[in-house]
Image (cartoon, rainbow, N blue to C red):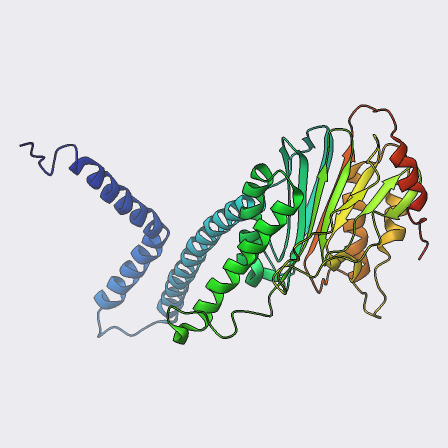
Length: 370
């Protein structure tokens, strides 16, 4: 039988943790030691002063200055410690947000990428909008979505959608299978949230399991030859940027948002014209298109895109920067909804044209100046 003493191997980590905690407490109290010493010295001096001697004006001034310095030292020490603690909390929160909404790489399987997120919650880098892009054996798959509501209250649904997409994008051979996995994840999140909001339901299903929450989702799949497949559930269609100007990727009616109704048995997968080398796609949430200024005028997103996409090739980072700055200028920094922007450009080598491309391009709507 093996026995371990408290000072042996098992006791060493515990002692190290206790020593570290004690050292942390001492470091936190260090800014208050000097004011405490001043206060103790002033109190001793005040008590030791002979009571039969008259209190002079100089003594009153010195006493007031000493106690004022002590009070100021305590306030500054506490403020310094609170500022340090707040800085640590912000670092932890920023790290957690970067795990939830990971920064996209600048290049992914021959595509140049740039993205940006704006949250209406002050100090938050993540809100109710989401995006992700992953390279799979089926092609590059991209999701962008918008949870009903905004700010920190929508992060739970964002985590459910992104976590499910990062797994399903690699597992499902068809884009429809990815969407069904996202739908199950959202439904599961709504049931769990409904049980939390209605604990009286016990272990059963609540009567109204957060039925007003839903997620608009756009799924894209870009094949090695530039083939483009899309599934849209209530999300704004992207814009195609290229030598032909700016035009919507598609104008067909999308499915209802995920979480409102069950998905149909047959999913209407939309096959778009190929994304040719040098062409780009601009994906966004409705917070960009629906942004208004103080007079109620909508943000001219398509006109700003036409200006930002001038030149060849289109720079994803430049487009993001232009739209971001113009959006903040239009709203004077007072956004009413979260905004997510994503631009991708096809940097792959040119492939032979296919007969279907010309037909698809002839049926594509002409750029609008609206």
